[in-house]
Figure (cartoon, rainbow, N blue to C red):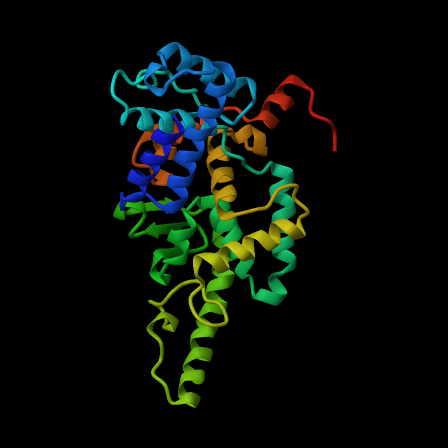
Length: 317
């Protein structure tokens, strides 16, 4: 079997669609299987492997407690390998390990309150930038890429209503998200500072004898600016991560965690102290910009923390 694996590896290296790392993983899976065959069925030739042997190997990997994704990759690798061997492929119809995606991790009300307090405390230093970003993710649920591309006209706020306009979301889809007061107030405060930043960038350009950058203009430039220009996704992630650290959260905080929290609060408002009925899934799908409602249904799954809370086994803080 070792010679056949070596020949297969050479074939894989000739495929431009496979990276060196992928080839290494495929051949590693095949060699691991060959080692198992040597131990369990000495003398068994590659063309003599049966579907029963394939099932036994899958059960062996399960007993070794490999991750389901690792087991499934190994089974796919072996299916590809045996496609190059004459005869019936013993791995062709073998059932894969079903992988149940965990429920998205969302912040609890207590955790979000801690994050918000840290953002409010930072407002004197960053003129409300972190607070505007955090509340936008938490109460409107945009993707970080959408926020990085957001222009000033994409946010319309007044004392009584507001609207976030995503003009080119995932799949180039346009969508509009109403802004609640918790998001409007920080955005209004930041917008005042953003207008001041336009004057600063104009003055800097004048002193240097340079043209004024379009992204710094008002009222049609980029909404969120850093010290060197528009905030990129990396900069936004760093700001949110620092809030999570300041709030002493158990796990690193990212924009997507706040997006998950937005969705969970719509689906389970009681968990956030809100006295209103859960929002229907199609409405949540529209707000999140999911192309398929099956993507939205992941929020209906119950997390381990929620199960502990429901069963009364969660330890008091």
